[in-house]
Length: 357
Image 1 (cartoon, one colour):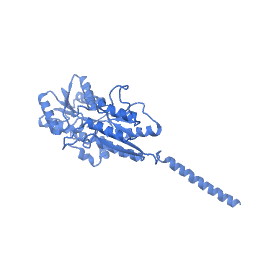
Image 2 (tube, rainbow, N blue to C red):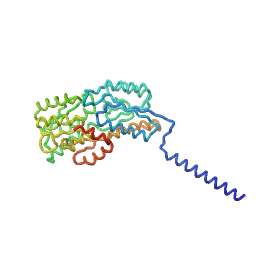
Image 3 (cartoon, rainbow, N blue to C red):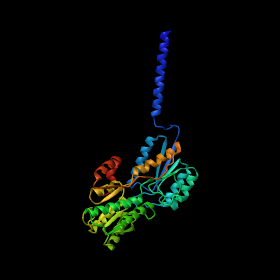
Image 4 (cartoon, one colour):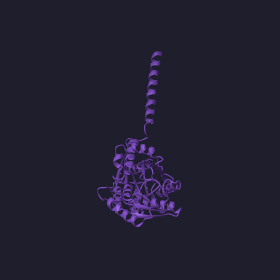
């Protein structure tokens, strides 16, 4: 009797141990219900020829690994193409938003390229119970007027231009580059609120030392953009700084200035070129000494964090209490080794393909 009692106790202890370890194993798994499925749609203005698309799509892939009960989709309203003159279309962007809303996704992430154009379809989505997160470009109107999305995740575009301008001024004061006389800001998209904000940031930085910054719309077609810049520089001999508000247009600016004999390198003479974004083409320009600096605005975060907030909103009712600013950070010859090593790990084989110098 005592032996069978001991055997019974041993068996009960063994069962208890199994139960405890099973519970611990379940607890240690990601807190994700396998039978619950969400679908989040990112509707972007960044297409396959912009290096920044790689940051966003990779971040979505990583998000799906962390949250296997979520499907993510990446759509874009146009394609940057160096072979084809395919322009961004805000009308196409609106159409894609309306198309997505009609499929009733569990969340939408979208840059507010144009508040006026996107207000109607995004308010419609929110009224239908579809949460919206703005990324990369916010609605810049006052809080009471802006589209009532959950939050904004992205860089401060005004600060991007301002910090790059301040960095250039400091470099000039240190005698590393010429002091600015006039800055040409090359902008490929007249509608894009974020690019306008970068221009205004640079303008305000240069205003502190009495230097004019003039915006030039060059478009996205490389041949037309080069011709536009060449005509402008020919008529404005006092320009000795070029600020391209997209990194992929910096080689165009450099080639035009080089053909014109303006010595466009980051040294003590000639033309100084400044660009944006932690991309292979921007880094390639810095590495070759053609570009003074660029910024990182945290594109990977701009892909991952909107998805995570949509997930937490559905699962736990979380709403961010403020916008989430992911940049800028300045990248120059001083820290290019570290940044290039990091970005090469992310882009892998695509890195060299996207370095269009």
